[in-house]
Image (cartoon, rainbow, N blue to C red; front, side, top):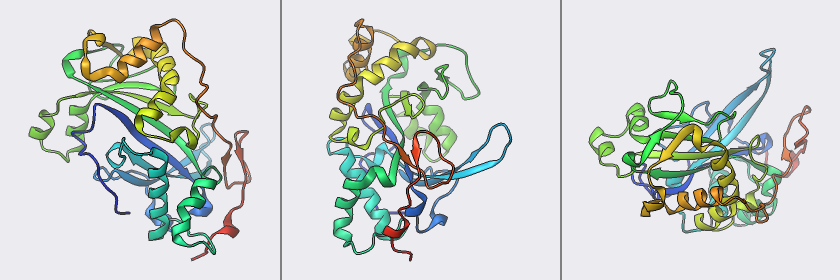
Length: 293
């Protein structure tokens, strides 16, 4: 695992931010496959993970997808988000998890990644979170197997609300006393993936959290308009001074007109290293550009 700065403790993150950015990694860029595991490490804010893709009808194995998940604790919301992602990926190259480029000095790696990032990686998902005080929320809809949790009815669910208290207790890696001292105990999360968002482009993550939030505001407002009644009711949202980001989403959603997504670039074609790829994928062989050891 790389050394990284933990800007926040898991229990005291700001009340709004990017929860997780999940980055799909081109197979040909991986040097040590053993660094990736099926599940993330709950003690780390940056994880290498893989997930097997299975044909749902036949159960036949199709391919294995590799991801690097970057969580909010490892992102400084006041700095450029994309530059932080590039810095993290460069560190994985430096320690040998990912392959180094041929004839490229390590100090030029970040620049090369910035210029070619969509040919080597893809955004698998971006999750925005907005934390609220427990007493300001009423959960709606039918309960599910997870306590005090609601998911929107679309698949995969783009909107969910859950008790952070229950999640931390289930993880069992924080003291109950510290968990109880959390100021904001309820989390509303927007889950943007390829199937529900056409704007997962790395350039949309240029800028601080405030800039990225503004870029995605119409997308979030659309999701909120379509699904908020399925998951949560917020008591007097307009009176909650700490929830100004969620209030902006709500105001745009209820204004009667949600602006077009002019500030967002559309999701680029994903560079899948397989012979069989879908209509939103292209087969690129980058192996010759990397060192083999």
